[in-house]
Image 1 (tube, helix red, strand yellow):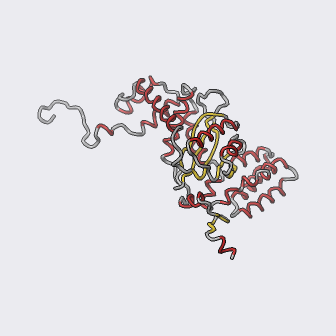
Image 2 (image 1 turned 90 degrees about the vertical axis):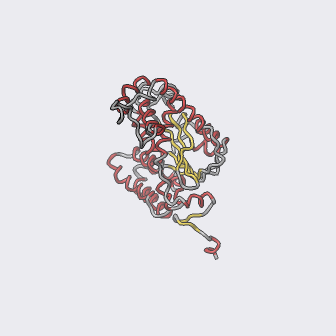
Image 3 (image 1 turned 120 degrees about the vertical axis):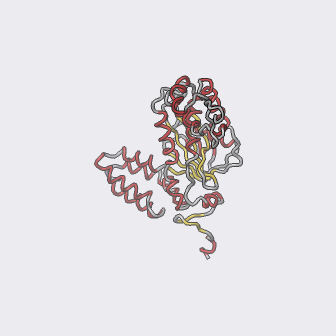
Length: 331
């Protein structure tokens, strides 16, 4: 105090009290909790770092976890009638967190809205290969007003496809090329894998569907005699593997793999790797939801986002380009 010379409690003139808590703390707490840090460890672990133990008591952390569970429950019960997901990616992600059974995983749907932005659609536990688990998820989305996506992208091993045909039969299917490539290479000897990988890349990197189909034929000619099972993995799913060629060329890089899910959960996997369990099943899902919700803020829109609305409107694309007046071309 300038007048009395006594010590005063510091008070920032720049940062008012209501905004001194960094919003990133809301990311740090679920991260640390998933890493196995118990609620009683937060004060000694973070007090020196944050300069205060305020808001870090076990009771506060417990209330936070309860709030995260409530947030996840509200998210999974929200109205989807006002949201339009034109594309969706689906995958079942195995994480080292406590679910009801060892083989259970986190079923994830990420969608692209009509404005081109990516958004988490749904996240719940289930079984990756179970059609019924996926059907429960998709039926719930439909019940809440979700429209049928134009295209769904996922691994061919998912039970998702059976469920999709039941709940959204008009949605087209696109198999993930990353999963397919790994599956094909696993059925080949190591000596043949480098060449086969290059031949597979020639298929999904082709300039259009015609060239991709020619690359499939070349792959079959090169490897069909010695490795018919490997070739069959591609030729049996050829239509579903090449579906992305019927959409805007700017979107091909997004639609041929489930990378939007894989890249997000690569980080979540690292953060959950060392935990022995995050408490209850609902707590575990809430933690994962919070981490994905945080990551979602950094997702970028798809390339040429204005074309997504045209896809929903039923516009035709040939060789990746919009066919504006097919009747004029015919004339």
